[in-house]
Every structure is written in structure tokens, then in C-alpha cells.
Length: 204
Image 1 (cartoon, one colour):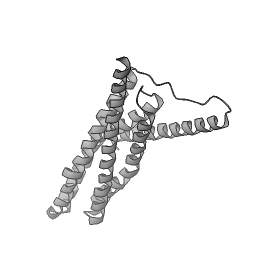
Image 2 (tube, helix red, strand yellow):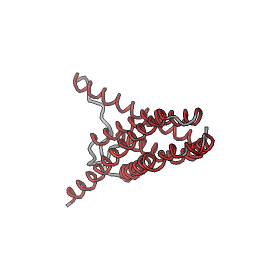
Image 3 (cartoon, rainbow, N blue to C red):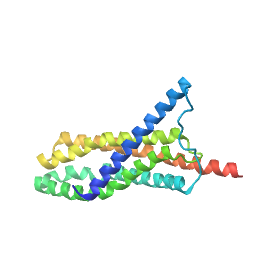
Image 4 (tube, rainbow, N blue to C red):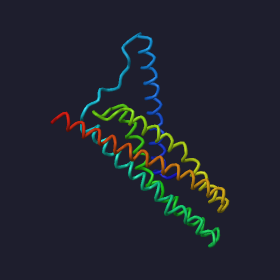
């Protein structure tokens, strides 16, 4: 396993652990409020800082990078798999191995996107609604959940050769990821608009 792919997996694992911890914290706060036993555990007060604004800008940039990656694969690259079938299995495998050997470095910004958005649950940015951040984090979980389907289809085709069934699985699962990335991108723009539009209105 390459160091870059290992870094990608570590970032995704960190994202999932931070998300799980945020969910547990929210559930705990809800029950504490319901029972009235103690003051609820609340996240760090939202504020304006270079840190949270930096997270937000990185989140928006990486979200739209993910949109380009998703649709680029769906429209331009993955259809080439079927185009290579007439050239034989060796040519097909060479294409697949060449692509997968270069893929890890391209995936790091997408993993960074997930980590940055979950960090905004722990370090909220002023004027950015938490419901938007939660929605983006939920969509990132959806991306993590669907990725093994596309990765599995590619691995099986590299081992066994081109398969119409595996190719269809690759296309629909990557299509689902592309839709998820597009939703994240639009929500990220909405979050950025909230942050600076409301900031300017309050300072006017």
C-alpha cells in the first residue's frame, strides 16, 4: 500500500471517528436538556477567526474539486473502460493499473474535504448554520459508504477482466458519488454566502 493511499485511509478514518463523536455529543446534549439534570454540553461558541474561515474556504474549494473529479470520471474517463475492450484484456488491465496507480494523490483533497467539514462541527464558524454543516457531513458519510462499490468493481475487472455487470456497478456508484459531491458543493457555497453576507449586514 502506497504512503499516499494510507494517508487517504487515515484521513477518512479520522473523519468517521470525529463524525461519530459529534453525533454522540449531540445525542448526549439532547438527553441532558430533556432530563434537566445539568447544563447541556455545548460546542465551542461560534466565532469569527482565521481558523474557522480557513476551514470554510478549504471546504468550499475541495468540495468543488470533488465535483470536478466525480463528473470527470463519470463523463470522460470511466467510459474509456468499455472503449478498451476491443483491444484485449492486456490493454484493458494496463489502462486500469495506470489509472489506479495515479489515483491516490487525486483522492487526498476529497478526504481533506470530509475532515474539514466535520471540524466545523467542533469549531463552528459564525453565521454558518449548523444544519448546513451537518448536511454536508452526512453527505460525506454517504460518499464513504458508496465508494467501496466502485472500488470493488474496478478491482474485480482488473483481476477477472471486463464485465458488463461490474462496469454497470462502477458507473452507477460513481454517478451516485458525483451527485453527492454536487450537493456538497452547492451546500458549501450556501454556507460561504451565509458567512460573509450576514457578516457584512451586521457590520453595516
